[in-house]
Length: 172
View 1 (cartoon, rainbow, N blue to C red):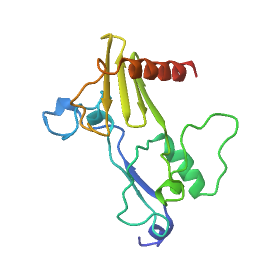
View 2: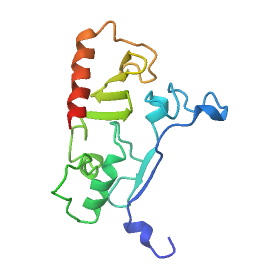
View 3: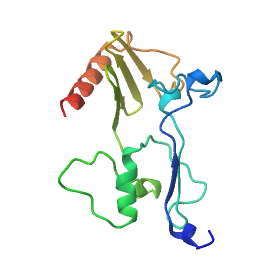
């Protein structure tokens, strides 16, 4: 602020995960289920604040999921830098979305993975799969953002389709 840079600087504040379960605060991620090291919303639904006066409207909120993968592309766009063309960049420039110039979601699908524990978010549907436990969990986050109603038995075709998405992502 002393140098006036705050008026023309994109600032991003975020976290890499939800609160840890081992610190003895059972409601740390409330209302979400889960903790750091899980892919339930309590483990991955984290703050992602962006501030850039004159570019991002103050006190605005964006309803769709974004991720750390978007920081590089957004910062490059803010700096008017070109993205590398010799590799796939999974992230996108968030500015058109935040400014209302891009009406859809920045990501139709997002993926998480830790060893045999894999997750895909496809729109509002989220599938988690654990190879170690031989288990899947399916949630409709639009109607159940706190993941209390597991739907894999009721939606076997959706489970299979989403497992295919994970397999295709793994092939990359």
